[in-house]
Structure formats: structure tokens, C-alpha cells
Length: 116
Length: 115
Image (cartoon, rainbow over all chains, first blue to last red; front, side, top):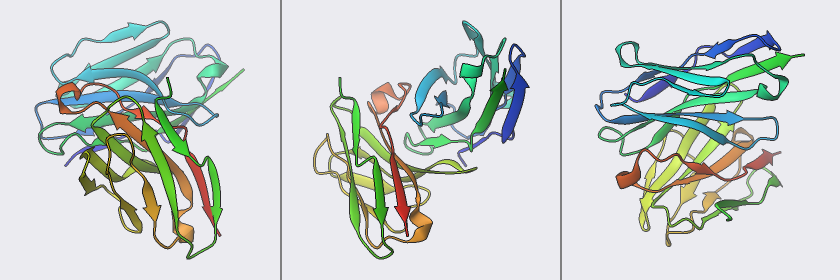
């Protein structure tokens, strides 16, 4: 089955704290893609990053970093020195090629609240 | 660049009414999808299409119909609205299998309330 689990429903942190959002996925496919999206209070969905199943390199973009581990089927997202503007709902998503014909499946999302 | 355009942005329906949510994309993408977003449940796939004339059901298809007569348009029809269909609806498009790693592009969403 193709499934994404974001076990953290809601996280609250104080500004400048580091925070990690967890994402665990399930698939039998060998070729798949993982994505993170941000949904700020305004409601639109903003693409953050993609990773394919053959590339386990971690990535850093400013205060954002992503840790992809196939051994644990996880694709976690860390925000360093969080800011109030990071407050949003964050979604992890999975697209499988063989099993589910390119459908994009989302996790339930994690609400991040950053307090000043 | 328009990207993915959804209309309307807000809609209130009475139980039993029907309506069509419009979605259009100008990126010549093969894949288009409809999702609904409910609190605590993320985005759930309603229907999707891998090209003009081809549609298939997603996770929560009941009560909804789709068709894809052109590459650009993918309307979602509510046949007989029910309060359980109160939700935020998103349309998405992406290039296709040869570019499966490309992210999906989303419309701005439609907030639908069924009373």
C-alpha cells in the first residue's frame, strides 16, 4: 500500500528553537518521489522540496534541511532557528510509479506554531 | 503565468443541490487531480486523470464525478451536495510519467460549505 504517516498532529515551539517534522512512508515500489509542501494561514500550497528514491543525499536550503533515510522509510524536515513566519501546516507526500500509477498521496499534515 | 486556476473560491450550497468546480491549467500537464482537505486528514485524493479522456477514482470518489475532455480542463461535479462534502477542494496538475519527479502545482482552493 502507498501511505504517508505524519504522526505529529501539532507542534508548538518558541522562536529560534529548532524543530523537526517527521514523515514516514510505505510503498513496495522501488522508484518513488517524496515531497514536502507548506500551507501558510493564507491557504495556498507551497512546494518546498522533492527527493527521489535513488538519491539519499540530505539537503540544506537556508534554515531548512531534509533527512531522507530509506532504511527507516523516513523523510524528515528540520527547521533551524524557527521564526513566526514558519507557522503553517506542513505536508509530506509520496508519488509511486509502479504500484499506484503516479498518484500523489499526502500525509495528514503537521501544524507548526511558532510563538514569539 | 496563470498556472492552475480554480473557480469559484467560495461557495455555499444547500443539501441536494449540484454544482461544478472548475479547474484549468495552462502548462500542458498530463496529470490532473482533485483533492479535498479536511481538518486532521490531510489532502485526500478524490479523482485523477492521466490525460484527456482518461479518469480514475482516488481514495474518496463517492458523490463526485469528473471528466477530462481537454488537456487543460478538469471539472469536478458534485451530483447532490451533502453536508459531509463541506471541505476545501484543491485541483492539482503535474507534467506526467516522464517527469514524475516534478512537483504538483496547486490551485488556490475552493472553500465549499453545504448547509
